[in-house]
Image 1 (cartoon, rainbow, N blue to C red):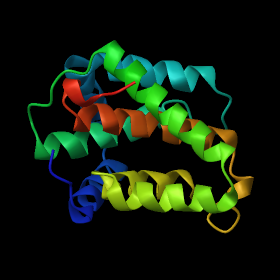
Image 2: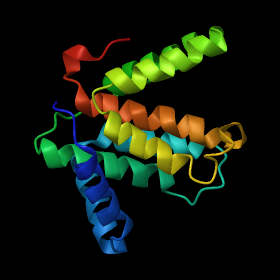
Image 3: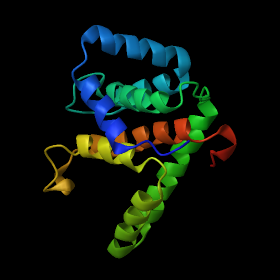
Length: 168
């Protein structure tokens, strides 16, 4: 899929942040119809973590991702549970590999991710929203930020790649 512009991401982000409860429920319903595996994944992930966020926060972010990506490709392929498992495993393996290295390796890996990732504007927007209030002291961010970021990057990866491109 073509990289989605920051302008498009910001426009949809602003629209959904100001959406009524009815509009948000319509998006959730559409996502449930078109991407049930992603809905189950996000709900299960949020249910498994302790967080100070309001219930449904991870699903809201997932809805933003779904809306952004659907805006550019209205007929997204239906992601299967195996796709989600493979994408999440790849993201966890990437993080584990980065953690094993030195701090310079971590910084280089992060820089490389953000310069080579196909959906950097979307991922960056999600990361900024997750880190809100912790920008100056990222080490103080709650664990839910890291878990949420992995889950949301997994959703982006699944929607961005054809099934044949999802690797374990």
